[in-house]
Image (cartoon, rainbow, N blue to C red):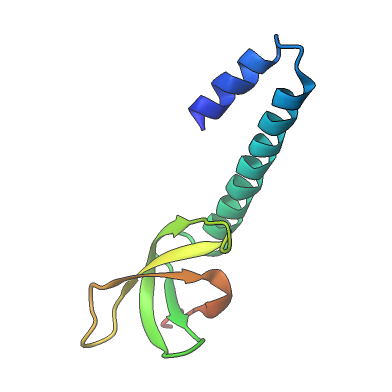
Length: 102
């Protein structure tokens, strides 16, 4: 991210519209990724108990976030299910639901 900011600042002095266009597209993609991460942090704060509901179901706790080209809203979850406790899984948020034990 810092490298991107430095390149954008340097591009402000350039007259090449093509290089500025590429940098603007890259900046827009970075902003989209950051927005998705912020949304995930609000929906599933670190420590939130969750359950995977698509495919094999298991319980876990949110320990982080990730974003990729195909999954801009991913969660990193530490499994709490017997037999798999401590394993870390990465899952798209659409496969996860909150599982508050009250």
